[in-house]
Image (cartoon, rainbow, N blue to C red):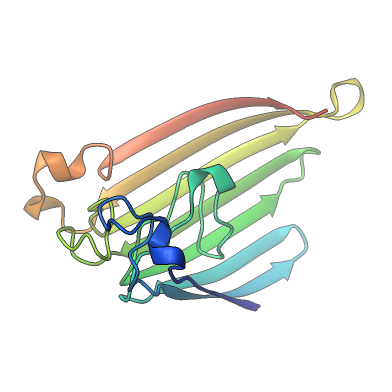
Amino acid sequence: MGVQGFHQFAINEGGNPDNQLAYILPDEKASGVGAKVGFFKGSHNLSFNYLGINDKGRFLFPREWGREQLFASMPRERYEGAGGMNAYVIKYDLVTPVDGLFVQMGAGLVNHSSMTSFTTNKYGIPSYYHFTGMHEYRFKNSLEGLNLQFLAVNKSAKERNSLSDINKINRVDMWNLNFIVDYRF
């Protein structure tokens, strides 16, 4: 089990005295708390994860810093730009009997603030359900360092019928399928 948290606030007028050009608004004070409870038995790992971000600002995490490592994070997910948000995620990892083959699955519910409240929902993302499944094979011996992955991700709008296409496209109601060949030196 674990708990994590963060607090962000603006310094030096958020990077620019003109609010239109500032990275963070001077009065933004985003805070968040994450929690995880997990069960490990043999080759099985099941965890229940939570992330809550207050509505006093947006969680800002530049892409140059990489992917945020929050308990509720799943592949192809970003919480950057969110405020007034709660995420509930179940994750399951399995080390299969096949040497080098791993399986990961996840399911989550992400409740965002209003899509029109850009002070807490930077990208206007609707609330959604998020599902992921990944198979990874890590080679041994002469091919050690070579990994093959198949990742399937689905995001489905929580209130599908009330959204226009402009609010769905590249945000929700989509599948993302990836076949990844990775070699680590």
